[in-house]
Image 1 (tube, helix red, strand yellow):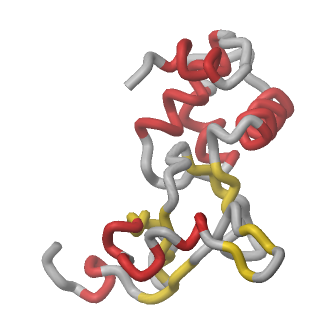
Image 2: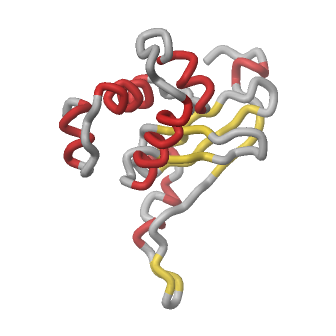
Length: 140
């Protein structure tokens, strides 16, 4: 995989220290963090990081297709550095969000390449809800 700086540059994003740190966080924390979670994690190492800068950076990342913006419930928006086609599962008990890769959903694997009449599908948001194994008390 490309280094974060090269990855951002390849997507037309000027790689500043703050942008690199934010992208690194998204790529290494598969928890689908909220803005507050990202800010809390990065602020100690980047004391000049403001929430405004964070919001603007995340919007830029979204606009340049290097992150997904997930609105799984009305309370908060989450961000995902994985832009490969996949679905999400949110636990109704603990609130954690998990990726479900398309290999696990073979019937949907190629749906983004299909057309319906004159409509071409470019993006699908598929979200599941239920209870994760930990909340059900099962071993993973």
